[in-house]
Length: 213
Image (cartoon, rainbow, N blue to C red; front, side, top):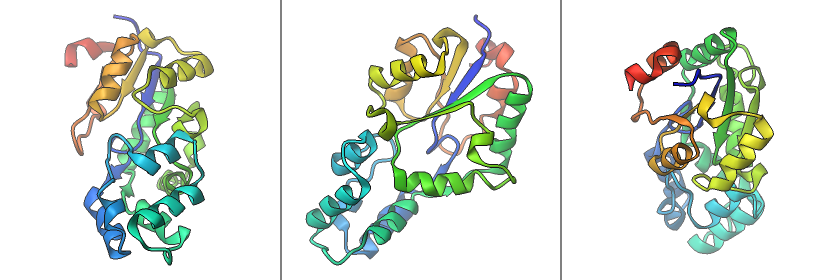
């Protein structure tokens, strides 16, 4: 077993607590039922997928949502609010677990399918313990900036090249089965936490990782 030198975290469902019902309810309150039906916590669909792929802008995605739902009066800000209802909190305990890894000399990174509007909410959440998101990670890899989506092999290869990491020395933590499978095929050590799971025991015992799977 190789020593783990880097831990790569997904955001939503791993570090950020999610509430899909709150999000779909927010879109329905705007009369955007057709958009609510597209919301998927693991793999983005249609215009949301193109937004997170970095192919279209947030405004262009909003235009598509308005056309789909027949709600031309809904503003970009209202759509950003509705999508932001997906994001609940980042528990301070998880932030401190990341701090503890960094104090041990372990590099920490993020790999997330995401979009610019959601990242504004998420970055604010990272201030819950008096720091900023940049204080917690050596690098943050976002789908809309890399123009690739998990679970494509390409997004992992771009991360490996940019981050200078070796998959066999890297633990990838994600709550999507397809994403975990893709990482494992490339040689990453992987862990898929269940909904709401406190996986701190994995982080506390990286040197005995193979014993606790």
